[in-house]
Amino acid sequence: MRRLVDQTIKHFGKLDILVNNAGAGTLAPFVDKDYYEKFESIMNIDLNSVVYLTHICVEHLEKTKGNIINISSIAGMRAFAGFGPYCIAKSGLDMFTKCMAAELGPKRIRVNVINPGPVRTSFLTAMGAPQDAADKLYESFAKLPVGRSGLSDDVADSILYLASDHAAFITGSNLVTDGGSIASNQLNFDL
Image (cartoon, rainbow, N blue to C red; front, side):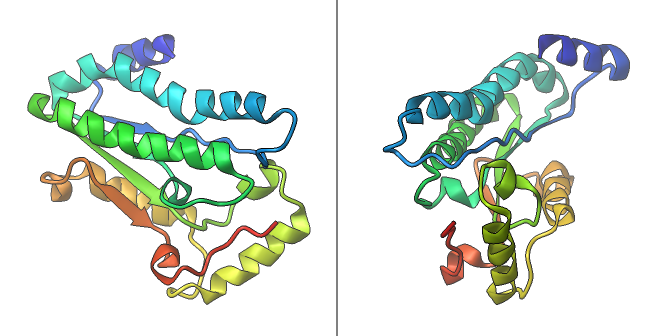
């Protein structure tokens, strides 16, 4: 990762924005024999890599009064049975964001987190969910208050907003981009 940061600075001369979008998950009921190995793997990808990359970027972001945007999940805000390691890692990412906002604010670095909800991607099947169960879940997104599943562009627009001067007084915040799924309590991962 350090080489990536060094090459970015060499090419662009500075670093204004860091978007940490690490996401891996797996179906991992606690009683699985390999639960702890899955837990460690998810923590390394979804949380530890973000902490490390943020750590090596701070010196550059301090020079530009930059901003850090972490991509979490609504799974960091509520539990989903069988997805404990993912939920725990994303909850840790939410708290990491708040801690860094408090610590880096005096350096004029803003740190926020986006908590996407149901965005139609291949993520569920990549986590081990059967395709028919994922399709059934995607169909249920029409029941969300906004009447549809999220799009990648919905998350990208949230990133653009938090990175902009329109959000200059926002730090340490969770921007829930979920189509109202938490508010309506209509999303369950019964896979």
